Length: 308
Image (cartoon, rainbow, N blue to C red; front, side, top):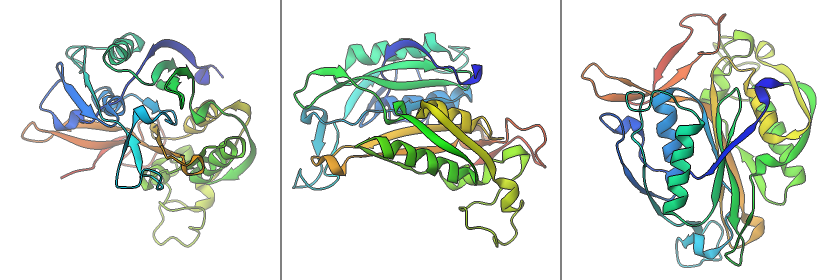
């Protein structure tokens, strides 16, 4: 349980739109203007430090937080968060900030709050990583009030044998059973193939892959028992990802809508995306794979390029 204990460290917010992989070096006093500037700062931190910094956002309902896309603001998915600007208070990157910890992220969150109104965020820490979660959100009247994430929902998941993406779906189903706003899990193919429970490399796809041609591991070897009993969904997710041979991270992004029934949050789970130099020194984005595994088959821990 100690690995899943979550500790609240500091209030703050985080949202951005440029990846460290697109820069030539450390990000110094970068000004970011984007729909989710904090989310992109999270991407930059993970790329620079190879450590999970998860991001969750609230469901925004105040029209002052939102912009209309298209002609009919009442249409499904016609609303998006307003663009915001954020000037980073510190240079990011190991040469300037050797340690990625709550102190560094706290400075970023405090600066974001000083420069922006709207939702307020706080930082949780666990042995798995750092977790940026909502703390306050504007209600329909525009006033800030206590607000959280769908992953704060207390859930119970029956302990059963499933494929990795089956466990993620079971977690999503458990949240949806207790929440008016629905959550959709979107683990990508990298998640399925490189979760590798017990060092078994699994084929991408879903639970119906018994005849997957050339699969490096049989489906039954890729399934395992897991469940959760009366814990916040975030803690359940951490306990699941601790079974993976590849460090995974997540983003919970919420789609606002004028109609409550159309509001939905997407839980995106994938391996860490890190940067490594090309031969000419320019940064290149990679997935970091099998970094938690000591018994995986070759090539074991390695970087898989995402871009040319």
